[in-house]
Length: 604
Image (cartoon, rainbow, N blue to C red; front, side):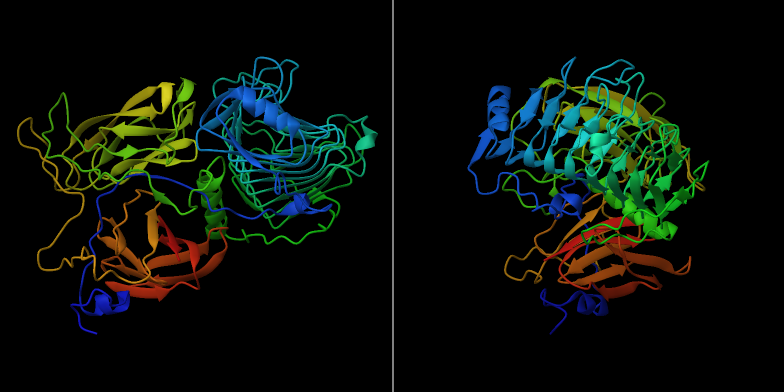
C-alpha cells in the first residue's frame, strides 16, 4: 500500500510522515448514549413503561395531561414549556424532545405519580417555582404506593418544597443520570430529595427500595441528597459537588443506605447521621472518593446487599474519580437524543467558527464569533429565557496570550440552546445539557486587548443575553498591541504547504470513520478523518486506532488515559515523541484524556 493511498491505516499515515489537519472549531450539543436501566426498577417484575402500547406525540399541555393521566401509552413531548400539574397513570413512558420543560405552578407539583405503576420518565426538564421556606409540594413527586418507576436523564431544579421526593410506601424506583440544582429563583429550603416523609410513617417499612446512580447534585443544593427514613436506598456512582452543601446524604430512622463509589468534592459533610428520630439501621460508606470534605463521617452498620447486579466505576484514585465526575457532568440531565434520532454525539452546527483579522484598540477588539446551539430545532419554547452564571471563573477576567481562561458556565432555562460572539480565538462556548460552558486556551497569536463577548439564548419566545470581557494580556516576548497594528491570525488551523494531506476525495475515504469530540473546545467532522487540534497536538481516529502526534518532546512525556463512558479506567500510558498509535478495545464510546485535555471518541 503506497503513501498516496487514502485507505492506509493511521499507523501507515504516520510512517509516511503525513499530517491530518483538523477542521475549524465549533461547539457541540452533547447527546448522551442510551444507558440501560439498572437498580431497583429492574426488580419486582421489571419496569417497561408504555412498551407494547401505542405511541403519541404531544405539543400542548391539554393533550399531555390527558394522555399521561390515562396511561397505557408512550408519550413523546415536543419542545416547549408545559405548565403542571401533570398527573401520571400506569403503564406509561413519557419521553421529551430536547427543550421540553414541565413547569411547576405556584402551588402543586409539576408532575405527580400517585399510586402509579410501571412508569418511565426520561429526557425532561422540570422547572420549579423556586424553593422557599413554606409548605407546598415537590417539583416531581412519587407518592402513595407508586411502584416500578424509572426516572432517567431528567433535570430538576428550583422545586418549591423539594426537587423530587419518594414517599408513602412507594417502591422499586431507580433515578439515573439526573441533575438536581437550585438557582437564584430559590431563597431557602433548598432541600432536594426526601425518601420517607415522616418518622411516624411506619407503614413505609419494607418499602422505599430506591437506587440512585450517576446523578449530580450541583450548585444550590444545601441538604437531602437524599434524606432517608425507613427505606433501603443504594446511592452509587453519583457526584456531589454543590458548593452550597451543608450535608449530602442523611440517614434517619431505620434508614438502610448503601453509599458506594460516589465522588464527594468540596462539600461540608458527605454523610450526616441523624439519630434524633430513632435508630439508624445502617449507613455504610463503601469505597467512596472524598476531596476537600470538611467533616468526614465513617458511617455506621452494614448495609443491605442489592438483589440486582450493577457494574460500578472504581473511584479509588483522583484520576478515576475525575473521570466519573466528567462523565456525569457531561451526560446528567435532559441530554438524550430526540425520539428517532441517533445517540451519536453530533455537531450542533455545520458552519465553521473562524476568527477574523482584527485590530486591537483601547476601546474595541474584533474577535472570533463562535456558536453553540442545542441539537434540537423543533419549534420555539414559549416563555422568557434566563441565563444564570455558575463556576469558579469570572465573567470578566484577564488572561495571557497562550494561557487558558478559568472555565465558567451559564445555566439555560426556557430555551433550546445558546450562541456566543466576541470571544478571543481559542476560547469557545459548549452546550452540555442545560449548561453553556465558556472555556479554552487563548491562541498565542491573539492580539492583546479587551474582548467583549455576549452569550444569547436561542429558541425562546423571549431570549436572554449576558455579556462579559476577556482581557488578553501580552505574553512573554510579545509586543503590546497598538491601536493600528495588532492583528490576530486569520485561521484557526495552522497549515503547512509541504505537510498537509488532503482527505476530501469522495472515492477514497478512510474506512471505518469514527466521530471525535473535543470536550474542551469541540470540533466538526470531516467525511474521512476526524481530527482535533489543540495548539501543537493532533488526535485522529480510524477504525479502532487512535493516533496522537505533534506532541513535541521538549517537556518530556505526556500521559494518555482511556476510560469507557461510565468512567471506568481501561488503560494509561506515558507517550513521547511525535507519533503515537494505540488500539481501542472494541467498538463504542471512549473518553481519551491527553494530558489535561478530554476527547470523546465513538467507534463503530
